[in-house]
Length: 213
Image (cartoon, rainbow, N blue to C red; front, side):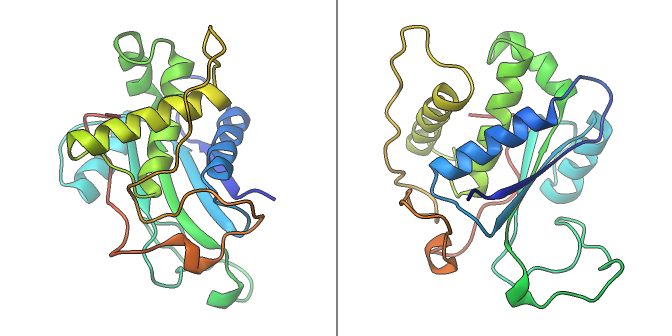
């Protein structure tokens, strides 16, 4: 079993194949050892929406290409993070009955399309990079210093080569165990017990508005 990915297209500026990107997210989580009973949301939004999120939660002005919002260590609230809403119809679930919420990745296709020619190449390549980049942030990776940035970029390339577009020479970059981030490297298991999921003081906040490292 794999983690459950909820993918939504809430913009109209660019075409988005939600099934394709949901599958990519599932494959990345599986490769990272994140199994069943874990949920992730990937939401494609327009520029005003991501700019508002960037200002409200990141304290930065203007639109960006991707934002990652981890869920904290506390039992999950009703509703979606970062905005927690009402529980809706039906009886509220007990915390023990709820899946572990990894977090939310917000991607702006309009910014992705604009950045693609000078960055990943095609629009689809840029979206794939942003989905992978956002997920790796949720798993604790970052690019605050050169060492972290290099490790994150290498991992992005390895994951994209396996699950998005294979290299022309057929040589896959090695997918080595991560040395940064609170999530442990992959293990062969269907489910990821909570005690394996986090260590340290928690996960990082919204992504850098400049986009992937």
